[in-house]
Length: 379
Image (tube, rainbow, N blue to C red; front, side, top):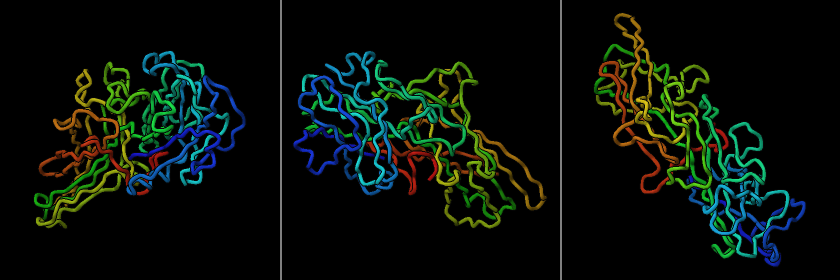
């Protein structure tokens, strides 16, 4: 998904043009070089229609703004957010009219530059994650500390963007945010091979899936790009107790669809059909990270539990299989990457995994399903 926010600085003589000007401002404040009074306004632009659904869902974005002499990176640790401090950009009508309330901000007329950092979904209380800076005099680049909720229904799609070292002459005063996904989207699909299973006196039901040995939280640095090694930082796990497990069952609100099959009804000529394992078009939204043991010998794994009924004997057997999530084709989850693990299930020959990877292939981003809501994980 690419969501594009535009910021334009227009002098008061240009305010009558087609840009949407800021409303509900309560006053003015002088910042370095404010002699020309170029007012900050916001707008959006069209993006490919396959992603228009997402734009219509995005109503509020948070922004930090810094003024500074020289490059932002020359003294990141000492920069302060004197222009915007977790200010909400709001598009309540859903028509691309982005506004913010409060004090007017102006483009510096001297040698000062502006750097902007955006994130979504917006929060104004410590309910989903923790933001820094907290005051306009706290030094350092903006960052988000986030721990992935245990329940898949509570997980969010965290997004960010930045535009650094901007001047009024940059793109004719236009600053554009391209929002990117900060997390990795994980999905599972299950397929039955009719060529192997057809006609057997067996039926099967998947009852539980859990992903384990993964890093469950970290710090997202909004001043970094998706290719920077320091975009996400987290404490190196000392042992298994420092790692997270995400468990889903096929009970009500348990995260898994009630997926079962009867091999007696299969035909060996039928194609393999893949079925999504997460209910309500949910996805696991997890921290980008290495998967190959993290230095403590505990690679990321998926554990699948299923019950098998033998219709000849009436016996029901519970089976548990553990499969690695780290494969030669993918040893790292990356921000903006969508990974579907396709699990072939067979009571006879066991389980194996195939991969279907979106994002970071020729620079593409994964796209959301119809009805996707970036503010929460519920479609």
